[in-house]
Image (cartoon, rainbow, N blue to C red; front, side):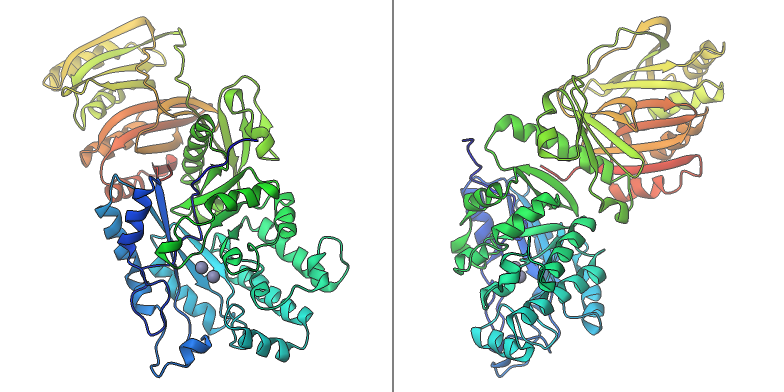
Length: 562
Ligand SMILES: [Zn+2]
Ligand SMILES: [Zn+2]
């Protein structure tokens, strides 16, 4: 038996910091839990907050106070700011995630209300869609009396659950583009029994079983994840969802998230390991967590080497998703694994193998990213190009490209390395010397002599290595790049003709964005560039939006996963 992790990357995490309200709900201080998580040596902590409800959707306890209030409204609006401050305060100590649990309150005013609330979740790492209330205004997870009142109104257990599933389906249809995760899918079991048709939903011909199968398929087809929620266990009704649902979800390849959905600091960390045992029982070996709406794969096993491989995988997922728009990001990609990553082929059902090729390839929507943590080997290929020793500051590389472009010389690829002493070296390989390279060198020595120490052209040079340990972007759309990943990377796909790349480099130089490393590749007349840079995100994004139509794609990639 392989050892399971003691820690989980929660999604439906801890509901706290909602401040004093007229009915207490998750009011512990945020700092207290962060401190507790740090004390436990945990790498991350996940907060979750309910979106506020319309006043017609209230629990008895809320109706029974003599004050009229919208629960959590104020704390919800302030939450992103408080989380941002918390992230600053604990920077370097712990990773802080937060998400929103969006309330389904029907397709009319409730939907508009929720849409209006989603703006406050702009910075959230994920959004869970949950049905807590029936359209009749009664909660599924309130008191027994409230549930029995609803049961009486609906007439039977079957129609009680049928109503709930109808609401879930409608929520997915309406919220589909706003949420990543479906919250506690069998929540009603908290107060009422599951009818036979549901207990045996896998084989039953009852309409309720059919409806539930449809719901699960909808979750799969919409690329949503399922919340495996330990709160049900604490409340004595068993984990949400029951094993049979989870097994089916696994067959449908629905990713799962794990979370304790706890509301008190004293329960922090409770049932972590049990949640992994629970999903393993249903056949899962991995689950997902989220950063900035992008899923991160996590292993259930306490295995260092495996975790390192997942880090590589998650960086690849982040790279690919940030090349795509929001709708495309939601689609679960296809995977290929090779070399030391081959074991993933068994974990991700539709994955294909790549034999000895020690890499992970992730693809969707006609785009792909290939990553590895193996340091690329020297190719030994003989190339021609320029060796440069120059000042390590913004604009220098751009001036080199500028002069080459002025002579009509197209750059094939580049290798950059900072000496960390204010100087840097570079090798710029060129496709073919059109006879003007020497000319270009003379021009550089004439106009930019202050920036360059040494500039030499070699015909039979070996591509220098300059590689260090890390995660590498091996390929973009199958084209070799071999860029060592830094905190921020620009990826472009562009028309491969002299001068086009200069547009990008000049744009960066204009805002003094420093280039740390640069790799180029091409396929037919399409050029690819991967540029490791350092600079302000908004400034960079603004530049990238103005590159012009020769750039088919230009994206800033940042890494949030751990
Ligand atoms: Zn909930
Ligand atoms: Zn919750």
